[in-house]
Image (cartoon, rainbow, N blue to C red):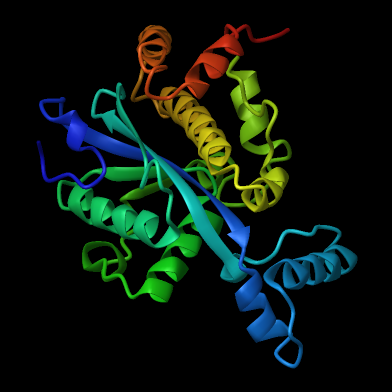
Length: 271
């Protein structure tokens, strides 16, 4: 075994170069009640419903700010310096307790940062990293190798990269990019369903959704490396074929991968 808090099962694997991550969150109804509606005694569900209705009326979207969100699922993919997929980690599986998820995340990021491993996200600068930093603040979790430096070269935000740092709006988002590459993208679950799933105690399904989004992010990452000239298109396609076979071999541990591979299509750009 290794001292890697995220991937102890990857002992003997080739050197890691990247960690691809995605997380899911829900509105924190208790926090909303005590901050936005302190004079009222609302249940968490009532506070969320009221805040969402107000946001929808004000902005046209019921999505609440990152400061009022609580992370409930994080999937990490360990990727080699050769861009091969080496391992999957759904943090704090099978319990998925927010405090333990956040503790494992920051401990793992600290471990890999010291090895010069970089992270890859989709909109991580705008959402995932602020969300996870707020959670570290909530629980009093130290991450000096990350937060003390705030260096710019350890994190590749694919949305930033593809939109020239926000100069355009990437309408369609990760789903569009995944489908352009023939990958599943969104299937039955979408992000706006996560809170309802949480209330219905469907935490396994939330983590399945998070895993599939993380895989889509990985494939978008590979294509950006082709654009950047560090991975040849033929090598990308060969790597993707190997990854598909590798995912088929992981379905016993992650049954949702069977559906993911079933929805997999070939990359056939048009016209």
